[in-house]
Image 1 (tube, rainbow over the protein chains, first blue to last red):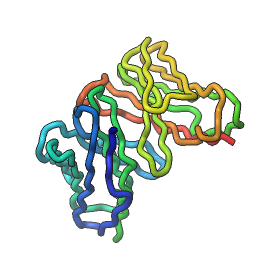
Image 2: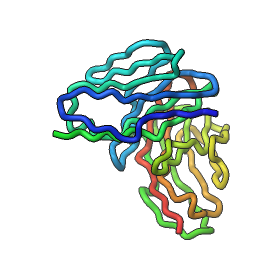
Image 3: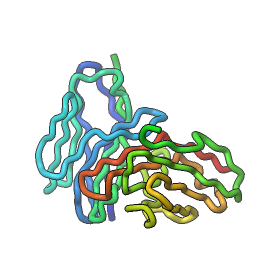
Image 4: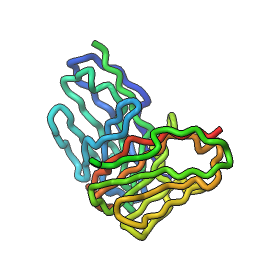
Length: 109
Length: 114
């Protein structure tokens, strides 16, 4: 079957660094997406990885290991506005996205 | 219009009633999608459309139907609503169905079926 696993909730301190992990099993693999979703709002795109390694985009970085079926999202210099849910999604052989339940990130001052 | 719009924003519906959720995009995207989001679960694909005139079933299509008469509009219809269809519904679009094509989401419709 297809499955995406990520922690339900994490807490971090403003200004710190946090890493949100995601493991995936998909029928075929066409990349791994990360989205951000603030409470009551729509998901918005953060990153896409299809090759192994780290992709850096400002304060956010995303890593992929295809051999391990593993990805993480790294958030640096945390700000209060980063409090949100972070959704991991794998693209299967038909390019359909299989979504994790999301990780709720709570930032404390 | 900028991006994707959905209507209504929220709705309370009696079980057994018919309901159409509307979705319109102005980005000339070929692919469109309908998801439902329930607490503790990931987004689940209901139906999708690769291009105007074609539709396909997602993971949870039962009880829902869609049409894609043109590029911009992708309505979702619940023929006879049931309480298990209480959820937040998101419409999304992408340039095409393909590897790196990010999906853009509408603001969602919160539907309660009593």
